[in-house]
Length: 302
Image (cartoon, rainbow, N blue to C red; front, side, top):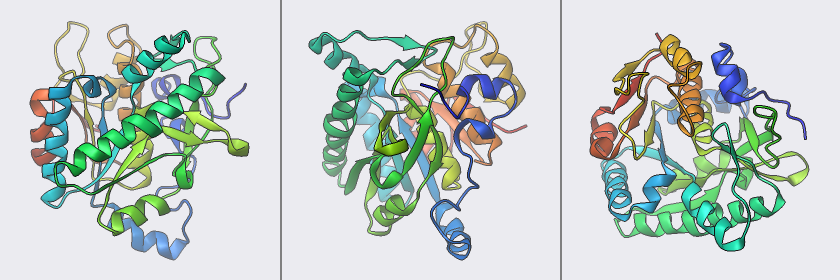
C-alpha cells in the first residue's frame, strides 16, 4: 500500500505540519461558504478532549477522568471526546493469537488486526464510555470517526520502511454528524477509526484524530488526558511550557519515544494550525486542565 499523506512525525520535524492531517481549510469541509462562516462561531466554543487508552485500564484513574469531563460538561463546556483503546486491543489480540506489532508508536494493522480494532474501539470501549458518562448524569452519543465520514483518511505512508497496513492518516473531516449530536445536547464520544477510499475502514492514531478534529472545529482547546504528567526533556524533567521549535527538537531527538512521538507531533500540528491551546495532563491535573487550563505540559505556537 502507498499513502498520499506523509508520516506525521517526519512532516512535523521537517516543518510542514499542515500537510500531516488536513488538506481542507478549517470549517469548510462538507458545508457551504455561508454556512461555514456561521458555524465557525459555534465551533469556537468547543474543546476537544482525548482520553488516553492507558487510563481505560486503570478503573480509578478512568473514573476520575470521566468525573472531570462530566463536571466540565454539566458546567456548560462543549466537549468532543476522542478515545483509542490500545491496551484493550492488545489483550484481545493476545486472546485471538494475533501478533502485536508497533512501528514508530503506531500499530501495524493487517486484516485480522483491523477486525479486532474495529470491534474493540467502536464496540466495547466506545459504549462503555457512553454508559459511564450516563452514570454521571451526561447523555452521550458514541460513534466512530468513520460514521458520517467524520474522519476521512488516506493510507499512512510506511514508517521506517514498514508498511503499516490498514492504518490511516486523516486528511479531512466532515462536521455534520458531530454538530448534529452537539445540537441535541449529547456529548459526542468518537472512536479513532476513519473511512478510507472505496469504503475501507482504517485504524487511525487517536492522538492525531483528536488534533484533526480540533483543527477542523476551530476548537478553543485541545486536551490530552493521559497517564503521564506531561512531556519530558532529555534529562527526564517535565517541560511545563513547550514552544514549536523546542517540540520539533524533541521529536528529532531520542528523548521522545513510543506513543509520545505521534502525540507530540499531533500537538505540534494543532498549535501551528491555529488551535490556541494544547495541553497534556496526567491524572493529578485532569480536573484542573479542563476547568483552568492547567496541565503538565502546555504547548504554544511561539
